[in-house]
Image 1: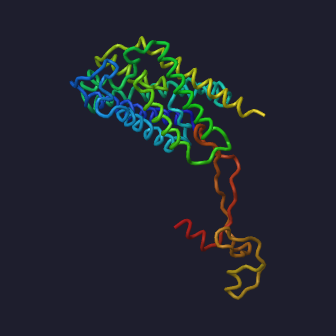
Image 2: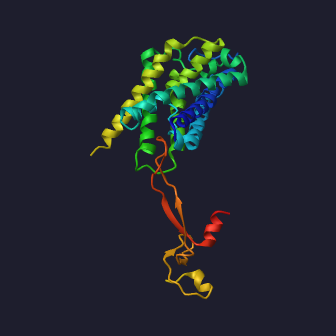
Image 3: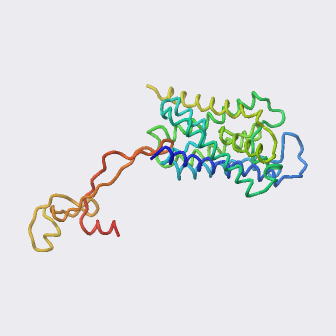
Length: 245
Length: 68
């Protein structure tokens, strides 16, 4: 399979993740638009059903991720996440020369998703939904946000190692289990820092907001680079160490 | 083992292969060999087509059923 075809697969996979996942967060905010929430910690997601709102968003992400893995996993590997690509490269499982093309493809896919989500839903998707962009919630510091993103991505990468990379893993379950893991992580940590777990997932909505007149959130972008990459790297090396003779 | 198809035609010929689907003994004339490509890998790595394909031997009836 040529690198071009694999990059196209990464674009499509990341597009699906951001369109349906971040899109679900934007729609929830649009549904809750105008309601009075009890605390600043509640921005509207959680108004209808508490953690169930986050579970619904998490499942939207999880199902899109599972679909992308089953549909595109054989073509590109369906990383759809720069943190996963970097962790696989750092553990010598992915060629150096293909890291940059994969990451660029993932960023393109995420950006296209945000722009097309706006095209489907109109200005409120940006002005109210923020295109599902992630940012630390009220009272959450920069460091706390990095930490929670690292812990969430640690679990994600650990599961990828256990159910997909490890040759002893049972076949056919990777997409389902990884999707459900993401849904679970988002349910718990979504209301802390957005539970991005993925620099591309944050990049797309940030770029969309910049281009389409939304909020400028770029000051938070390092959170979603440092946290996910650190978490994924720790997971991959820890998994290898745990499994070494 | 004898070739089943030849035996049906009243001929007597030794089988040199067995159909992998129905188990029929086949002489050289009736054995249909085709190459099956095989892949390794998959999520989270791109699947890779192996250089060597895997041969598969079928009888004419099973071959026809597979390609119909």
